[in-house]
Length: 425
Ligand SMILES: Cc1ncc(COP(=O)(O)O)c(C=O)c1O
Image (cartoon, rainbow, N blue to C red; front, side, top):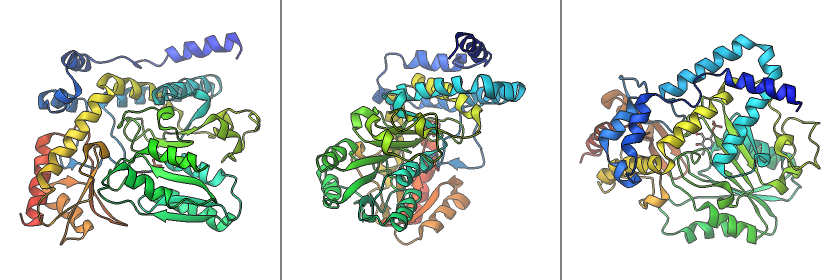
């Protein structure tokens, strides 16, 4: 880039007020948390009650459906609105002069968070777009095989069904146990589905309907030993679990940043290991970056899109880092265990989430043996004022319960009471 243009872009960057600055409220929280370990903070209701104040929440219902997307803390929301105003003020001038520099900056911040090279990561609209781009753009040949699970996200399963029809690929679908006894059990489940014709394995980092966390690294090791590539659905893992992409060792990784990273709606990411980039057919052709260039920009063409959402990435990452990834994960696991441990052993209650804390995160799924999942969800909302989502899919029949950092234990007490009453305990 020409020096003159670069300097102009830097000047525009500084025109975006508010980014990276924090209110005194957050500063107080940071001071309070200093020197405390994540476990200690996880059960500190006074501390998390202050965090709750950073959000604007509906008083009409208890939101236990943060699995769909994360509402933004007020501070990020306000900064996002400023970005919308600024882009609208500058109009096409912004789009032509500063847009790309801002996108590159945001991309490099996400790459840094994920521990990978910026040449291996691109921003997309969501997980669906990221993973379906790989499934659809993979160089399939008739007779190739792919492996996935019934509990994977339907959009990816639908895409695999499409490529099966289009290219003659055979899909082998395994079913994940609700409460596995060991990582080996899960690794063996996938290993047994692999044949010499298998090319690609899809696994969920966090299973969306049950909250089960899969041993991604071990599954990748096993698959690679058999010459099979692994694509990971990380929709719920980014900014919930703590890891880097090189640690996992996968070949492809897609995620939605509007979930746990609390980026405004419509931002996702796609990671492709350097040496795999050239073989994927882009969703939208990008002539400037031909196959020989092992740069993910080949797969990055978006067309015109809501650029202000990309601008908010800086604020969302800063917020997450200030909260502390370990503190956040410890609190989310604490909240999940807070309510599941109170209902798990009740006769009439169906727990669809593993017991081992290492196999879980914020998300858990609970059913009532005698009541269909959709009726449980309706009762939770109408009788107890709790918003959740009903799941009736493969071996998971119940409501997905997803607290967030703003959830209080007193809200979870309402949930526990509701489950006990519905189960007749
Ligand atoms: C595991 C998983 N994968 C993919 C998706 C799709 O996410 P998006 O709609 O942001 O593409 C979801 C959405 O909830 C999900 O839970």
